[in-house]
Image (tube, rainbow, N blue to C red; front, side, top):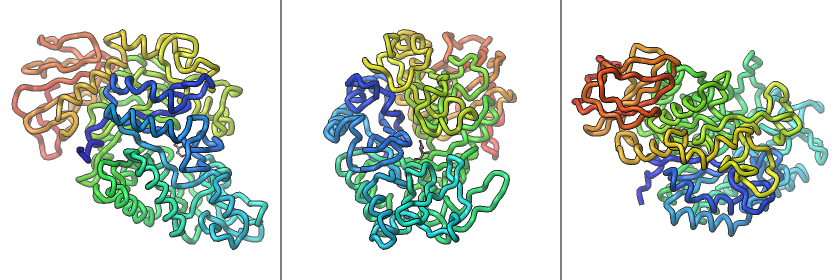
Length: 541
Ligand code: GLC
């Protein structure tokens, strides 16, 4: 087995409640995922990351776990999960679990014990403080913009929670807790899971003195995250994973807003001794602008240690769908294809959020329909909240889009009769087929999987262009973010078109890159000379 498979793999992120229901209760489940394994094979997916499916009161969509060693009945049973592992592995698909290290549910037995008295042996497994004359210990706020300390009636002390009060933060400075938590990793590794996505992993350790955060305009959060001790824990985590060859990990480095490539990269250590990969959020905050993408991508590459593996995502269950971020939803189909080509040709491991391969957009959700408590809280600043990017998968144009035979837990996007798997498979130039063909191309070309990347200065602000080079194979990628045609004639000689998001053949002198078109081609000529800055001296476009 190649223990570095994850460097070449294409990952697919599922929000399990919304992927496929198998029993008609309107909620996606494990058996539903099993029934769709051939879908991953058809698309070319190598590994699936599942948002949490553990036992949970579901205050925060499963990110509030009350039993880390069991599956929530909403999704099935442990046996269903074992069956998923077995069947997925038989088809060569790996399964990555989502593990929440930062906090548990307040219904977790550890917390129930911890809250029961000040001298309970598990008291120190969470972050407790008596407060200052009845007042909160410090000025820390939650990521949901509220006071982060909750006074517990049992002992009258405060506990700290980075998210909802039903999600008390664990104390990673406590060795017993740490050991117990590492046994949870082992439990799933022994069962055969292929890795973990670690939820908000940069938040797990807090300042030992619980110092106040400085009060600045952007509420700079210094003391309740990004503590140096986190790196030691991740080193231990990597040692554990190394005992299970072929497993991998990706950490969510939560920085809101904007992302922080340097911080994300720091959690890879020397590239071999902490996380395998780290999610930086910068691309999530890019507007539709080739330069902005260039800068965000370039800063991330620059920040990585030489052995560090980059990874990219453009949508997720919190941030919603990439296509809905660019103001008025116009040319969505073409933009979705361009982004798909970008994600699948950048150097690094791509993570596709379910439904993005169809060009799904955020749904309109009325206040009444919102299920996510955060969405309810923040209405109307953030209309629809996180639910708008969590709507059920659109399989076909039947009632409920083939997602369920019952009433879906959240309404489908109203475009599902048009934007769905069945329709898109039949259309050669759909987003789905763009995704499938690009994955296929990526698999046949070592340059797209492993090659170096160099950005090309094209002279056009609207074009993002780069090469991927491996041995003597070089592939060029040009993404036209602009709504204008761009001339490609300077580059038409000796080039062979490998892929275009439009039906055309580039073989004449009048080559044009159409609005929002993305193309991939090879140059048969020798490698173009590079300047010392790494930018091509004579860009072909
Ligand atoms: C992560 C998850 C998000 C959750 C939060 C708290 O950011 O992606 O959905 O609400 O952590 O666990």
